[in-house]
Amino acid sequence: MRNVTRSPNSHRTPGSSGTSVSALQGEDLRNHRFDYLIVGAGFAGSVLAERLAAGSNKTILVVDRRPHIGGNAFDYYDDAGVLIHRYGPHIFHTNSQRIVDYLSRFTDWRPYEHRVLAQVDGQLLPIPINRDTLNNLYGLNMATEQEAADFLASRAEPVDDIQTSEDVVINQIGRELYEKFFRGYTRKQWGLDPSQLDKMVTARVPTRTNTDDRYFGDTFQQMPREGYTKMFERMLDHPNIKVLTDTDYREIRNEVNFGELVFTGPIDEYFDYRFGKLPYRSLQFKHESLEQEHFQPVAVVNYPAEDVPYTRISEYKHLTGQVHSRTSITYEYPSAEGDPYYPIPRPENAELYKRYQKLADETPGVTFLGRLGTYKYYNMDQVVGQALALYKRIEGAAHTQGERAGAEEARQVARQAQ
Image (cartoon, rainbow, N blue to C red):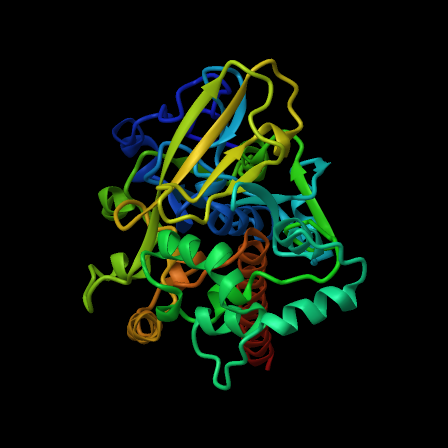
């Protein structure tokens, strides 16, 4: 990669970036034409950049205002030498072999099945709720799935018209389990009561009658063996790709000669909040290094109680398999202010996004991509799939355009021969 960013160093403070913009303007920006300017070096932007460069021989400038590549999946070695995720735990899981095959070009994998415990009534209990959760919480000895299903059915409170996240859970497992595991956590995470949130928020979390304690049920559950940042470095390692970090694209947009713009940042920000801001939930992270080998039995422990200010504690060595005498953990605090992480799923927000989407459709030369660009929560594999699908559309359009141009050229040759 003719990359204008130094590769993130395992012991460099995650904030050190590469060559300054001003040092590049004369040589690279003003005198070099890029086929694409891609804003954002996370999954969406990096995957599309790699495909356009390697698959279609396009020249790409990737710009990110953060001081690193990798977006929210960025990981690095902290001062203790422990590999951590700067923006909270990112666990890769998918049912798509196509996406696995694509990412495997840039990383080997470490098998990992994610497990989460929730601190409820003084116990650490499996979440999603399963039969072990119920047995331990209520001092029961249910041995079959049917017993657990009957138990949950006896507590469920049927809701005729399921509209909200509260409706989903109460309809499945009743109010007591809802209040112990979901209400407090959801209020902290979203700053709203579950009765104010779209049903999709809690519908994502299953309830099980077996003893499967894995958080995800996907066929492929593994972690990049050397971490996400290394994977992104390899993905962007192409002579047609240049990367500018620590740079707001608006600072250099008028100095870059480019053909098409792909924007993976917030769509409302691109249009200067013309219709008002799209609501997001943000997060604050408190990272700590401890003089002990392990802190908790699994990678993530949830704290649903509302009197605990954080939602969860993550310990990364469970994810990475790193052997180290010390460990590092992260406390996660949801926030109304800060970087946009989660689009807030409410009907009025969806309607506001539709206005921006219409504006985007009417704006030539720019394509919006990713969670922020399309105002929708996606898992990592879904963002990869979205970027690959966009590339296929671009490739198909170019092929069709080429066929038309070829046909026109043939007609001109034929006319000249007459």
